[in-house]
Each structure stands twice: as C-alpha cells, then as structure tokens.
Length: 508
Ligand code: HEM
Image (cartoon, rainbow, N blue to C red; front, top):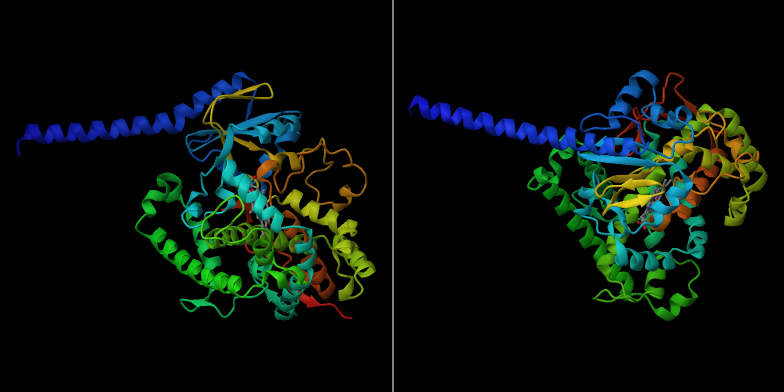
C-alpha cells in the first residue's frame, strides 16, 4: 500500500469523525440552544441547559450540595414567583414545564400534544396496554377498564387487601426490614393480582421462581435498562439481540401461563351465577360487562388484551404504590407527631376489622391529609410520560414549535410558596387548616390529569390507606437515626439509599 493511499484513508477517517462530531454538536447543542433562544424571546426562563442530560445535571449537583436531587426544581417557583413556564434541554429536545393552571388545562385538552415514549419505550416491547395507547384506541380501552374498575370493585377489595397486609405484618413483626420500599412493592404486586384474579399465584412457577417474581424481575430489569447510559445514547437498538431478547422470551412465557389461567376462568364461569356473585374481581366485571371474544371490537375484548392490561396494571401499580407506601413509612418514622395523630384517628374510627369500611376510611380526614402531604413531597410519577407537540401550537400566550417536549411542572407547583406556606416543611395539617381550600385545579396533581390521568388512583389510595392503618395499628417504626434521605432520579424519583425500618410490635 503506497503512502498516498494511507494518507487518503487517514483523511477519510478524520473527515468522517469530524462530520460525525459536527452532527453530534449540532444535534445535542446547537439545535436545542437555538430553540431555547426562541422561547427565551417569549419570556420563558431557563431552569438549566446542560448538553444531553438537561435538568438531570441539576439532580447530580443538588444531591451533593443540598442533599436533595430535586431541591432547585422544587425551589424554582419560590425564586421565580408567577412564572408560567420554564425550560430545560434533554438529549436533542427542549422541554417546557408548565405551571399556570389555565395553560395546564389547555395542555391537557390539546389534541396536538401526545405521549412521547422517550425513556419508556423499552416497556412497549412486552407490554401493550392502555398506558401506551393513543387516540380512539385509548378512549375505547379507557371505557372498558373504567366500566370494570368501579366503586363496588374498590369496596370489595378491602377484605383481600387487609388479608395481604396481615400476612406481611406477621412476617416483619419485631424485625428489621432492610429495604421497606421493596417489601411494599411485593405487597402492591400481590394486591394487583387479587384485584384481577382474586387469588395469589404462588404455585405458578417459571425458571424456579414464582410467576409474580418473574413479572416483577421483568419490570425491574426493563426499568434498569431504561435508566442506563447505553440506552440513553443508543436507544433500544443496541439491545436487540441481547437482554431484550431474554426479556421478551420471559414475557412470552409469563403471558402463556396467564392465558391458561384466564381461559380456565372463562370456561368455568357461568354468567347467571356471576350476576349473583357477592365479591367480584376485575375478571368477573370484564366477563360480565364486556364479553370475551377472539376478535377485539367495540363491545368485545380478547384474552390477549386482558393479559396486556393486567401486566400494565401490575407495572403501573408496583413501583408507584410501593414507593409511596415506603416513603410514607419513612415520614411516619421521622415525624412522630404525625404518627401519634394518625394513631389516634385510627383508634377512634377502626375499633375492629368490621370497621374497616370505605365509608370509615373516607371519613378519616387526618389520614387523607397525611397521604396528600406524602404525595405532595414525594411525587413519584412526575414526568414519567413526557408529552410532545405534534405540530406548531399556541398554549396560553406561548408559541410552541412542533417537536418540543411539554410537561406539567408538578413538582415545582407542589412546592410553590404562593399555595403551600413553608413548602419544604412536612405538614399534613396544611390540608386541614383551610389554607388550601382555594387551591386552583391542576396545582396538586400527583396522579396527573386530563384523559390519561391515573386510572388506578382510587385503588392506589385505598391500598395506601389500608396499609397505613394496618401498620400503624400493629407497629412503632424505628429508623436508623443516622439515615439521611437523599432523593435522586433512577427510573422514578427514588431515595438514593434503601429505607431500613424496624417494626416493633405495639404493646396491647
Ligand atoms: C401512588 C400510586 C400511584 C401514582 C402516584 C400514580 C401516578 C400515575 C400518573 C401520574 C399517571 C399518568 C401518567 C400520564 O399522565 O401519562 C398514571 C397513569 C396510570 N396509572 Fe397510576 N399511579 C399510581 C398507582 C397506580 C395503580 C395502583 C394502578 C393500577 C392498579 C395504576 C394504573 C395506571 C394506569 C393504567 C395508567 C395509564 C392511564 C391512561 O393512560 O389512561 N396506577 N399513574
């Protein structure tokens, strides 16, 4: 090979690398910067600009300097009162956070704003439920599920939920649990199973693990991938022949088992008997209301769809409820005064198992205030699903370019001192003292709003409340006095170190 050819190859490689570098800089620096300039001219304040990772650079900085990865975000409206929007970058996108209630309403009603799958599309490889549906398909699925998921079903879930908590309470009595969020994830998983099928699946195994352990592993593994650096830079393409294949195989096997269970259930169900059945589960309501068929239609649902929706519920309920309950226990262990007030309310209302009714639970005002305050401080699912503008639009006075990511700034709103006095203080009393009576709609939004709001929110709330009642009735909670809560961003907003608690039996 002559020297001339070597020089040509070197020049070619150098040019190719330079071009790639220019494209990279253009895509991840120049393009978002120029778009941010467009929004800046309209008065939108920048929360931060950091190539590629955007506001997650703030999280890392805040963990070190403030001990809370979300401090600057939570404090944004205290520093910038009456701001209607803020902006950051993320990968090659510009993200606008919306704070103004009127603009939030417009956002939820705008048909040119759809879910953006950035960070969550990995789940779509093996889940095809309502959470990923758009347009008419979403409306149809939402109708089917809402019909099945009504008040009577929630009421009938109180005894099974109570049983699940009793089982776990026996297991942890006078013990230290090293990761109590993980324990509450197991409880949440079990509760979704009972919601759908009224039974546990401990006897169903795949690869020496129970089917629910497999399902939880699958969801956790997908969550790990979704937050990995490789995934952020390369997308799911790099996984095509590796982990993703294993995930899909496991999902296929799990679905096969549930298909058999559902088939048996349908074959053994008599519609006449069902009408008079006392305690119905989600499957009963789906069979009764909907009718199961081979082909999906306006009035019919297929077994495959039921499986997809069940796995969606499992995934959507597992981490959210588990983390919220785990964090609620953390707050109980730290704010003993709240625990005392809660214990008094529980003692006055729930004197025996028979008192554990939806009516009584609804009337426990301090319990509701405590749950609200946990959800305000710890808005776990904030911005899980980002939205994107599918064409140029106007929201409020803001001209929004197609391709801009749009989100409601829930976390910022939950800490806006205009509404929440001393917002960083954990104070359930604020929900009872009248100061929040005139809170505008869309400011406190832990379950999101609009057509995609959390369909499981009433179930989640009743589950969390029963968990709190049962655990407070049984235990005093002790946390290591040296434990320091530092919130970070994993797949969701999560504590950096597991929360370890000792559950000491209450003396009766
Ligand atoms: C504390 C517990 C929970 C929180 C904070 C929470 C939060 C949320 C949020 C914020 C969304 C909306 C996401 C968006 O706007 O795109 C959502 C959607 C959803 N959640 Fe929950 N969730 C919780 C528990 C549950 C449970 C227990 C279930 C099921 C049993 C569930 C099922 C769903 C489903 C199916 C959707 C999608 C609804 C749709 O797209 O129409 N969630 N959740």
